[in-house]
Length: 362
Image: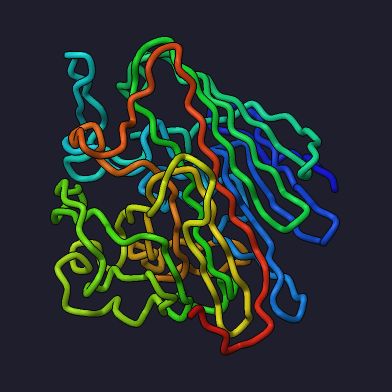
């Protein structure tokens, strides 16, 4: 088990960027850049032991540096993953104004969020496997957020073929915080086409419906009887084209599911299965929600690794998170980080293979 580092270019202001390759004893590899904390590549085995890259990414740093909008391939998003309505929130009686970079709303930390910065990285060993630790200081007022926020992010490639992502943060002034990773997965490999044949099970009886601009209404709506019901393993494409207002708003799935039985332990939230290859990805998280996004805005204008053009639904995201727009919904899980308190969050993406092409969850 090891980590190797290679130079990967420089940012426009001259900061050096490295690409780190984490390898475990099974032959699994994860490539991670310290620009944006991007998961550039992540291999996974099929039922015959064949490995493919299971995430969408770019071949070069230049593609990650291109001006927005871009699809946030594999990056860390923050300070606030997902949306904040009208680009503003009030905390302790003070109004804070953020960038409106998604229509009138604030998305994924703003113009220069955590996906657009160089993180200070160091390689480590651990009992679980090779670990890459990254640190970043987000200064008071950056992108409109209060407080000097010190964030530590670690990626561990475990001996049981999982990528474990852990977040830790402290602030010197009360702020809001909601960190996540924005990897796009395709368990058949990006060259195989779309993810509509993938089957997914989400441990959630409720989701948060949205308005036409993807802001939660505040309702927790039961998934039963709706296209959002993934309580049993179901093909993603089975209902994605139904005449449903929520699907129309997102152009497909782009919603937050309210995970069941959350008590801040790291528990299984999602299982994703690709029938043709038998690849399985299990998602474990300490977060109360997960955003399933089915790559609805990939429009054939993004060229990824190996020269593959990424089209609609060619990858899907499973963004473990607190809920979107929580600062405006007091009954949602709180995203306020108080001065002197510590933010911690863990998500694990574990890969395995099923040896029966027709196996189904009961």
